[in-house]
Image 1: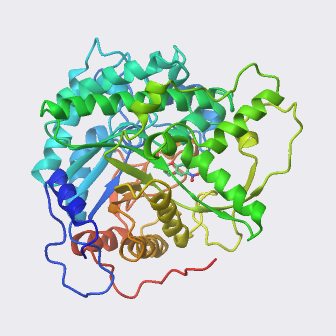
Image 2: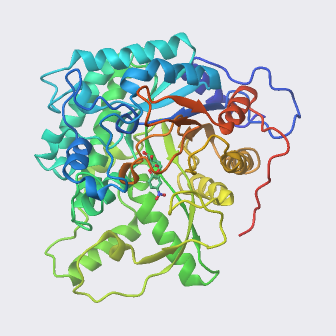
Length: 506
Ligand code: PNW
């Protein structure tokens, strides 16, 4: 079990906890000592209290109020799982599970109601400070996402992430968070899935509802990368003054892209999709060279020229920016749920509207016989997880990786063997990736602790280990079967016998 011993020791120090001290040797599928299990949530999806105790309006408040018809069940996060009031119950669930960390996000508008740091909402500070201290007294490490999609509306009114000055306002927000919380929080994640909020927020269906794929999407990504680099530097400067002895990283989403067939053009298409979907953010931060992936630069530059733009729709970094973004990580946060098949898209006429999809030029599908979840995009393909981890290892020199999300949505109900099957099969794939392939993974996070507001799908898709009753005043939480399974894994670091094996072939 000597894989990456040093990182496990360092990670244990950061988490202030060594896991698995009682793991027996040779007892089947067990994770290395020091490997950590946790669960995740995000502010807008669970907190509710959207306008209570000084919180300002976020883009998700504005968007769901203005466009209930765009949300599948016409709901919103005004109350959600009411974790603003029920957080003590959430901490009790975490304790009951026996996880070593809890990944949650801070709502920017709850801390800085206008988005700017001139006015700090002390009630908001108090909410998170109490949560963090309750976690500490239960020996659960907080892993904090600074931005999980809920931008303060006043900043959106200035253009949101398409405005370059956002990088500076994000630094101001981060400064407040580090000042107030970095004595307790040792694991920080700047952004959750920039691909999702830049692509879906500025060129898809998510808040703020931008409909400018292929233009604003890239402006957003550009400014998010600049913001991330600046906040990484801020944290390093504080480390030097010994004010912040922790780790900071970014969470990126990587579904595995498998070539639809063994044909060369499908293999090429799969690699192009990996670069557009993951490399867009990973290459500037985690590669030796820095900057955007070459293939992305080439394709978008060419398309832009053919479409008669005077310059590429993909902005350029200055040499200084490339330098400051490159290497800006202590770890990679990885969200992984599913796998897709890639083949070349049929070519489009040159005059076509610019979009991210057209730039990428890849047709993305799934196999009908891959088992389904309750989300149209999510099928159960555990071997894709192992391949994704190996691709990351090879492409970016095996960075320390914390799996910050993995999970499945199922129909309501607490009897959820299919969720156990999903987690178990993905954990077996992860175990192979760590022990056989030597992928540098230090921990695993299940999404989610509790059912929550699943963005444009409202409450219709449930990912929780605990079911939430949205009709009860306290949003009562009830353990699912999978909670006892996951608790057992978190406590023993070993997978129980007799769960269905995953298959390694497609
Ligand atoms: C994540 N995909 O988003 C988000 O971080 C969570 O807030 C969300 O609740 C969770 O996944 C479940 O959807 C994703 O298409 C969005 O592969 C899309 C994908 C993956 C994750």
